[in-house]
Structure formats: C-alpha cells, structure tokens
Image 1: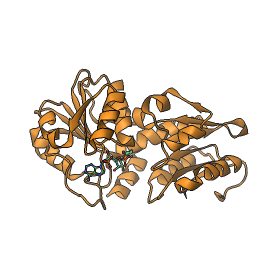
Image 2 (image 1 turned 90 degrees about the horizontal axis):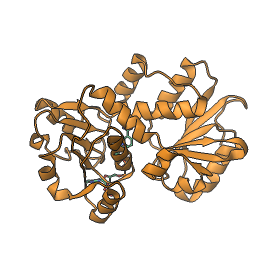
Image 3 (image 1 turned 120 degrees about the vertical axis):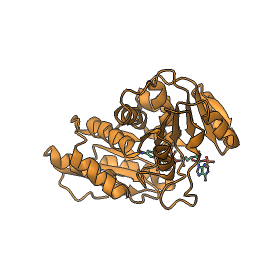
Length: 283
Ligand code: NAP
C-alpha cells in the first residue's frame, strides 16, 4: 500500500468495497494543493475479510487518516481505540484519524456535514419543530436523522423497505417508523423530506423517484443526498411544484471539509471552483 508520496507528505485516503468512482480524491487533493500541503488522497479497495490487515497497513504506512465508506462504516468502529461523540451518536464511522502509535480515533462527519448543507442550501428555513420524513434505513439515514435533530427538527418519520431494520433504526433515534407503502401518507404532514436511499441514482436499477413530492404541503423542503445526478427525478419534480430543494453535493462537500480539518488542522474553503468541478463530475 504505497500512496506514492515521500515519508513526510500527508497521506490520506478512502477505504471501501467496491471502492467505485469516488469524488473524494478530487475534493481532498484540491484542498491539499490550495493550502500548500504536500500529500495525496487515494482510494483503497479493501474487502471485508481484509479490513483489519488493510487498516493496520495504512496506520503502519504513516497515514494521517482516512475516510470509510460502504461496507465498513460500522465494522471499523471495533478497531478504534476511541470514538468521538459524533460516531457514538450516529453509530457509524466515516472518518478515522491515526494517532501516535497507530491508535485510531473514529468520528462521523456525515451528520454535521448534512446539517450544514441544509443550513447552507435552505437559508432561513424554519427547521425547528418541523416534522420530517426520511426515506431509507441505511448508514446515510442514521447521519441524516442526527443532522435533522441537531437542527431542531422534531417529529421524525422514517420509511424503509425492510420493516424490522427500519423499526430498529427509528427506535434508536426516538423517531417514528412508517411502513414503506405508507410513505406518501406520512409525507402529507411533513415540512421536510430527505431521500437517503439510492433510488434515483445514476446506474441504480430503480431510477424512479422514491416518492411523488406532490403530496407534500406547500413550502416544504426536499433534499436528495444522492448526488449523481445532481438534480434527481425527485428534486426535479419538487422544483416543478415550487418546493425548495437541496442537492446532495452539499453534504458531500461539508462532510469532507470536516474530515480534512480533523486530519490537517486546516478548515478548507468550499470555493466556487471546487463546487463547480464536483457538480460537473456528478452530472
Ligand atoms: P445503505 O446503507 O446501503 O442503505 C440504503 C438504504 O436504501 C437501505 O435502507 C435500503 O433498504 C434502501 N434501499 C435500497 N434500494 C432500495 C429500493 N430499490 N427501494 C427502497 N429502498 C431501497 O446505503 P447508504 O450508505 O445509507 O447510502 C444511501 C444513499 O445515500 C446512496 O445513494 C449514497 O450514494 C448516498 N449518500 C450520499 C452522501 C452524500 O454525501 N451526499 C453520503 C452518504 C450516502 P434495505 O436495507 O432494505 O436494503
């Protein structure tokens, strides 16, 4: 595992399986360059059976930290000597900092990144006490629920196609489970809708919107954390109805910004150039 940079350069990366095409290298390498930091961010495809040895290799190779994506976000928690509050609350780790002696500290920047993207994408929206419906019960849904709660949203409904999994998730966050078939009914009384399923994502078997936003009340806010394409069918339909929309690139950029700051001590800027490049890549 050689990132191809010299010993004292900053080594960063992403572990996942399958690693796929990630926009994270574009984002982090942009910031390394902008801040005059010598180093590189690379992607490592690590299958579950090699997680322990793969992570140990990164730590031994002098990595400052790395992002974690599907399917390792929960498994990597057991390897961390320390978990910060964000990781404990969401129950998942998307960012690991490698400390002295290779000790791992796990964090989750998805929840705060999601909340920041909503605050940025919908300035002035009254999140406090607004009922919200979250679609999906996977890792991203956990972060979305935490992010909504941090914004003061109350009365969170969660609809997922796997009933038991969705019930467990909802119970863990004091949210209310909704059967997948009843999601349109629940949406009628919600001011915020967030899609945290891969429905509508480019290349996904089901390219349809996960819900018809026509059922939402006027003035509702619709966010799709899928960012390929940037304007999903769900967002297009919501925009046609005059609803406020927030695209998924904001969450991607804000969670990355928090991870970069944790590794390097530098809070990078989400400049126009970077946002534009991410949006072009997402098309
Ligand atoms: P995950 O852990 O695999 O969870 C996916 C969820 O969607 C599960 O609840 C799954 O249900 C459900 N689902 C999948 N296919 C479905 C279908 N055909 N109909 C109904 N429900 C379906 O994935 P994740 O990590 O939560 O990610 C979900 C999406 O969010 C992905 O598209 C990912 O790219 C996106 N994401 C974006 C960001 C960002 O920064 N913008 C960050 C993280 C994730 P089952 O449990 O029944 O399979």
